[in-house]
Length: 355
Ligand code: SF4
Image (tube, rainbow, N blue to C red; front, top):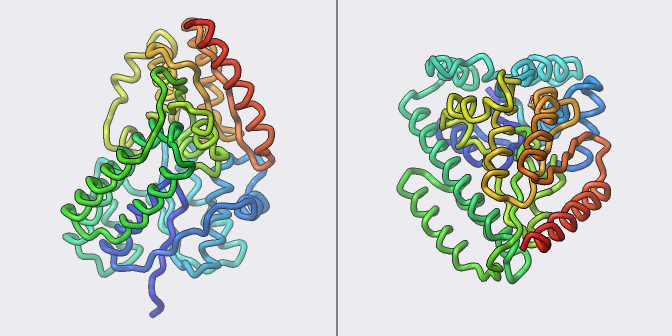
C-alpha cells in the first residue's frame, strides 16, 4: 500500500501546526503546497467557476501543485459561509480533471461533537491511536496560539527594525524550528527562546508612530500572498499594524455574544463569516485612536461587501479614514502600492495637523 501523503491548503503560518497533527498524530507524511505564486492562481482560476471567491481559486491551484509534488490525500475545512461547500466542489473538480486522490472534508465534522473529528481523521488513516491524535491536536492548538503571539509582537515592531529583514529572517527560523517540536516542554522552550531573540532585535521606534488597524475577510487578511504582502508594505513605512483577526481569537475564544452586543448600534443581524468581527474591530480601532483602518477582502466576498456601508458610518462617526481593498486574480501590486502610498500620505498629514 502506498504511503499516505497529506496536504492541507496554505494558510498564513499555520501549516506548521497542521503538519504536526498529520505527522505526529496520524503518522502520515505531510506535503507542503509549494509557495503560492502567480502560477498557483492561474491554475486555480483556470479550473474554477468564474465568480467564486479568490480563496477557492488559491486553494484549488495549491491542491493541484501539491498533487504534482506527491500528495495523495487532501484536506479541506469548513467555515461560516459558502466555504462550507467548497470541499465538495474542489473534490468534484479534481476528479473531473482526472486526479486520483483521497479527499477528506472536515466540514463534515461538528465542533459540538469531537468524535466526528476522530471519524474524519480515520478516513485519512484507519490505524488511528486516539491518545496520539489527541495529544498532537492539543500541541498543535498551543502552537497556533504561540504563532499568533509571536506575530502580534512582530506587527508591533517590524516597522522600526534597524536592519532590514531582521524580523522576517528570525520569523522564518522560528517556523522552521517549530517543525521539530515533539512536546509541550520543547514548544514552550522554543517560544521563550524566540521571544527573547525577537525582543533583542534592534529597533528605532518613535514616541508616537502611526497606527493602522487591518480588518476584513478571514483568508485574505491572513494569507500574505493573497493580500499582496500588505503588512510588509505598511511596515516599510514605519507603521504599527494592529490585526486582531487570527485563528486564536476566532476559533479558540468565543467572543460572539460580546461582539454582537458591542456593535448593536451599527448592525442588528449577523451577516455571516467574519462580518461581525470586521465591524467590531473597526469600531475598536476607531475608539482606540488608530490613525486609519484598512479593509481587505476577496472579490465576491458577500459578507464583507455587506460590512462596507457600516464601516463607512464608523468612519464618519469617528472621523477615521478607511481604505478598501478587494483582491482578485487580476489585482496588480502597482495599483495596491500606489493606493497604500496615497493612504499613508493622507494619514501622515492628518496626524501632523492634529498634533
Ligand atoms: S469569507 Fe468571503 S471570501 Fe472567504 S470563503 Fe467566505 S465568501 Fe469566500
